[in-house]
Image (cartoon, rainbow, N blue to C red):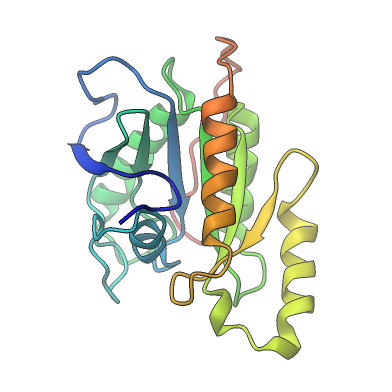
Length: 216
């Protein structure tokens, strides 16, 4: 079945150490980031139209940076969730180091998909990650997940609060639902247009401080 992102998808590499990359020629890449339990695995499975990511009610299940190859045209990089305090400190530090190297190294992603929970007010860890991505010079699309769980009477207020925090002329925000498929085709088109159409500049801005590890 065709997905909003492509026809074929396969896991190319589960990266467990900082700097680990697929050994094939570099492809454009979008990195997927979000707090633990934001619905990242469900969204990936929905947007790729296949069960590539394990869905769990327990936060912290993703234990590596998973590189998925889509249509032999680009990579989707699934990162461990941040903000889950019960994850072992050693694991949190390792994940943060992997993500920091990915976002600030020479071969950084062409695009980031930042997931935020549409049911909640803007979270400090999400603000920190959005700032980190901007400082690192990684173009970003924000997807507000679990939109089906937001009551119709609350949708306008919730979307306005999230847009005020995360959306601007260069960083679009889109409410999505993995359960109903709402706005997933639009998200897929948006990511492909920005990913395939983006030209690398080769510029490497100064490395910011590390990404968030836990909620303040």
